[in-house]
Amino acid sequence: MGVNKGYIRTDLASESVMNTEETVSSGVKFRRKNRNGFDFQYMDIKTERASELTGKSKGLYITAEIGRVWLMGDEEKRLAEEAVAEDIRSFMPKASSVLTVGLGNRDITADALGPKTVDGLLVTRHIKEYKPDIFEKIGQREMSALCPGVVGQTGIETFELIEGAVKRVCPDLVIVIDALAARSVDRLATTVQISDTGIAPGSGIGNKRRRIDRESLGVPVLAVGVPTVVDSATLVYDALGRAGIEETSEELERVLENSRSFFVSLKESDVAVSESARLLANAINYAFRS
Image 1 (cartoon, one colour):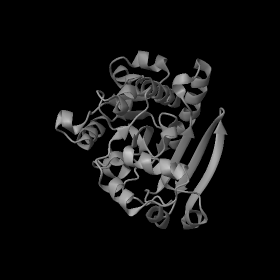
Image 2 (cartoon, helix red, strand yellow; image 1 turned 60 degrees about the vertical axis):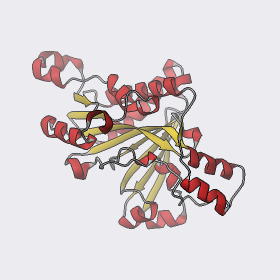
Image 3 (cartoon, one colour; image 1 turned 90 degrees about the vertical axis):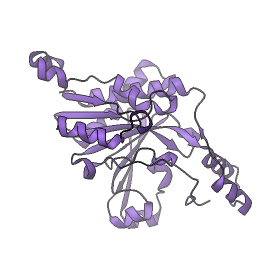
């Protein structure tokens, strides 16, 4: 089964780019690492040819296989948070000020990852400004945060709000948190993707907005996400592949291409998203301790 189908939607680089001789020769480098018992996959797209072949922007994509964090004990959660924090820190270890943006609609469970992550952050910019003596004792770098909501709530494009905050706050690094779409249900709330290529909000569900990246904002942008939904047409196609059905009929192709698809989330979506957000928030807090 090929993956170049219009109805196959995924934000995960690990699901859309395979480690083949063709991709490697074009300029994609793959490696794996185990950290604190968790598997980390690194995919570095280095050339324009590789970018065109894979359909992904040039840059580094990290996929962390964390597992069901909502079923973990406290010690396992701590190890996962520290493992993710190490990779977040590695992108810009000397950043003295960080703006974290939580994308998404807080009122929709599967889309609330960004706002819930921001809820758990230790924001310190105001303390540094008004109580510098206390800031020095906190042991945390300058951190600010923003939840811009969605355009249907505010009437303002997400990018415009972020751009305004960046111009005012002047951070060394922007971290953008967003819920992602996956191809496989096994990825839901079990995988963390980290990338230095930025993000186009809503791209995984076919509602692409203006891209948020270094080129558009003028500062480094780190995109961090966890998949929370699978497109129904993608789910059907993937299930057929698991059943060994390599070819789909023209009739089924038309149905998958033209049907009014919907999105599937976990039955434990509320606790899964909340615990995933807590993991990301703690990882970011760990990453930028001074």
